[in-house]
Amino acid sequence: MYLDEQYMDQALELARAAFDADEVPIGTLIVNADGKVIGSGFNCVESEGCQLAHAELKALREATHAHGNWRLEGCTVYVTLEPCSMCYHALRLSRVKKIVFGAESPLFGFHLDKDNFISVYNLDALLTVQGVRKQECQELLKRFFQKKRENGEVKKGSRED
Image (cartoon, rainbow, N blue to C red; front, side):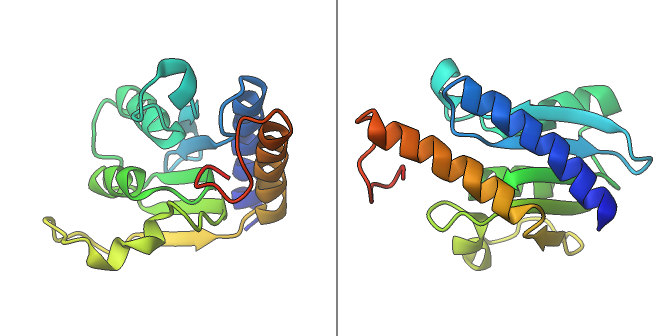
């Protein structure tokens, strides 16, 4: 668990960079079996104007280039917010061993429809660990959306809140 916390601290630093860039503060690290960070990213959906600029997908692209293979067997993903279905399944198809996340995502998290997803691949179970540095991850998200509400950019109770 100690290593999970150390890597999540690094993912939180990436999330803070997203916060500073006025993006939803989500950070992701991908670590290989030797403990080396081979991919990282933070959310850039607004600045890139593209839904595919999620932190997980940015880290995934970097990791596959560094690894020299799209199969990331033995790798662990650290992400500050529970991945959405798009990111979860991209990571799953990449054969990562484990996903560790901080805060749950009640609106967009993969848990909402993972049981309804028809698996086209017969893959081993993906280990998922939740709640690592949960409080810090949640607080950063709360501060971000509070700032947005104060600036009139997001209304309380909206889907973006």
